[in-house]
Length: 336
Image (cartoon, rainbow, N blue to C red; front, side):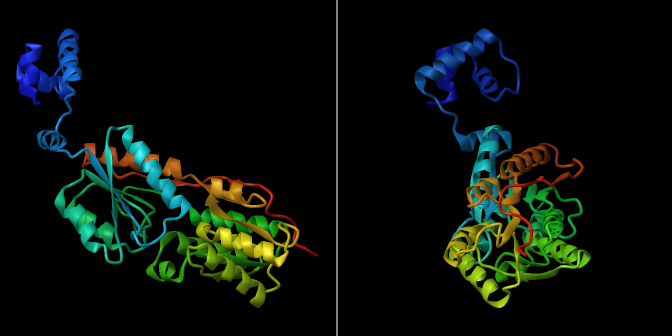
C-alpha cells in the first residue's frame, strides 16, 4: 500500500496526501478526514526510511550508555527510561548504543552513519574524547554531565560538589569529626569521571574547613563491593562515625554489612549522600540524601537536544541542578 493508492481511493492528488501526512501545507478539514478514513481502512503506515529521506531527518535520537557488559545502576536505568519517555512526547525513537571498552566502533557508527538526528551522552569524563568527536562531526548532542571546560556544549548535570558540601556541613553540624566518602570505582576515578572527582573536591574542602578528619575510599559499583568496603572501613578506621556516598549500586551491600555488624543507624553511624530518591527511601532507615532528579534531567536533555536539532546555530544552553537535601532518618548526633 502506498500514497498513490490512498490518493486514488480518497479522490485527491498524491501531493495532497503527502501534505496531509507531513503537515507541510494546510489541507481542508473535509479532505484530511477523507484521507484519514482511507488510511484507517487500509491500515497504512508511512515507511520510516522514505519519510526520513523526504524530511532529511531520521526522527531518532541516540542515547549513548555505558558498555553493555557493565551492570547499569538504578539511576542510569532511570535515565534510560526517562529519555525514552521524554523522546516519545516528540514522536521520536531512541537508539541505545554502548560506548567505551570494546564499543568504540559502535559509537563511531552513530557519529558517521547519520542514523540519528542527535545524541545524548551519559557518564561524562572531565576530558571526554566522545565530546570532542561529536563536536568535530557537527552532530547535535547534549550531555548528561559535563566536561571540565564545557565551552559551547549543551548539557544537564547535578552539582555534585555543592551537594556533597551540604552533606558534610550537615554531619559537622551534628558533631561528627571522622567521616568517609564512599566514591565510585577505582577505574572510573582514574578515568576522570566527573561526579566522583567533583564530589571528592567538595568533600575534602569542607572537611578541612570544618576541622574534620576526612577520608575517601573507592568502591566498585556492586553490592558485594559495598559490603567489603564497609567492613574495611570498620576494620581500619573504627573511629569513623559518618559516611557520605555517591555510590548507589553499593548500597545493598552496605545495608547487609550494617545488619551483620549490629550497628544502629543513626545511633552508631550516620549515612548521607547523593542518591536516587527511590533508593534513599527504600534504605533502612530511609537515607538523608540529595535526591538525584533523573526524570527531570532526562526531560531537560531531550528538550535541549530537540531545540539544538531545530536550530543548529542557537546559543548553547545548560542546566546545573541542585536539589535539596531531604532530611530523613539516617543521620543523627555523633555518638558519645
